[in-house]
Length: 557
Ligand SMILES: [Ca+2]
Ligand SMILES: [Ca+2]
Image: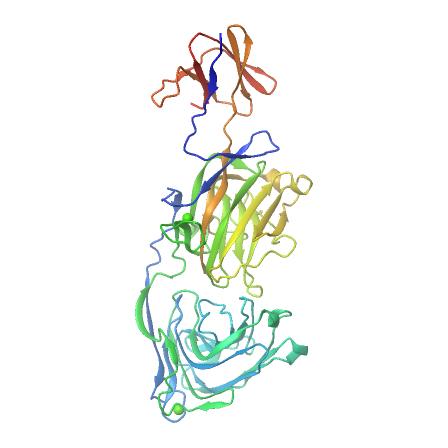
């Protein structure tokens, strides 16, 4: 009598692939291309607070005399914003290998504002710190202003210096002569910038290796600081000499401009989170339209905000996973905008335990997190590096970004492939995290004892930090991630002429065998009520065989 038996698992909608786990249960991966809304879980990720803000820009040539020279000057009302606004002279493109010089008269009326004056590149003016810049930065503080000297390379690496140790320089009627000079041969060829502002002077040497990043400057003029919407201010310039060419502004110089006379509403207001499912878009370079991402800000876990200033957007895992499980994720990323002091985190986290309020502010990384961070410092631009937080406030990766130096990721919109692997047996059992970007790997070992403190994960996706800061615009697509345990395998063997044995692993408690006479979608699956016994690592159920075909499956009620 032939025994016609076949096994089916009722887990249709998912594409399963299993990864080996050294801790008993195989884990399953899910692939997601975001062709349609994946229905992920979101919290505060499309925030409505703070409200959008009005951005007013009203600067350029003016026949006025605020800066003290003969009538005619440039300047006006400038608003720091997420969107660039400038008024600048087109110059022959020059680089870090060329000497640069500028001078003139500066007037800063009382008020706020945050503005760059200097050499920049109109094609890469997108954020602060601003790549391809050598500039003065004027930060209005009411009755005084602070002045800085700063640069950004073509690869978003930046450095700076203050004037007078952040001296409070009186604003109002006073006019200040200024100068800005770059010497490519300074400091043994590293390159130095020297500047004066009134009675103050400042010298800045490019960090070792930064000159080799390169930079292209094709404008000199006034550029707003591009973080997010902030309080406006005024400044005025006259008698400006740029690389030896004087400009008295006796008539309109007709300089290049963008958004310098405008009035609009911006939603780029810190910390108004705006990320999640993005139908149709391909910013991450995915194979098809639809992806996740958008505009993040660093979050804030302080109790006063009661969870409203932390956000996430994540897939629900089918099981709660821990640091005892191998975790994998990979996909494409497109990084479009990165302000200094900003972070995007992607990885495994917990919908409640990663969102706990806490005033300690001693860890930016959320509790219960294993993943990758896109983050500075500004002297290095942005890295993609591994990080983690445990199920205990403030206990996390100890500041390291792993070894060797992590891969740089530039906010230039290019598509990259990335991977994330947490191995609980890595580094002799402490656990380790490996992140790659376009094949370049960095490994972070968990500290001894951290795995024992533990962490739990029931989501995979984007989550904000716990200490506030600036914003990033980043997208992810074609993601594959560990979603939970792989389904158990049911085996069947004939053990006697009219008897068969069903077996499955004791790693899957709670599963029960079902039987049916057919595999049609309308099939009625009956619970197998025969006794379940345990024999070592397997559950056993003996079932009688009959003349009719019978099918068996495992199901978790
Ligand atoms: Ca003038
Ligand atoms: Ca897609």
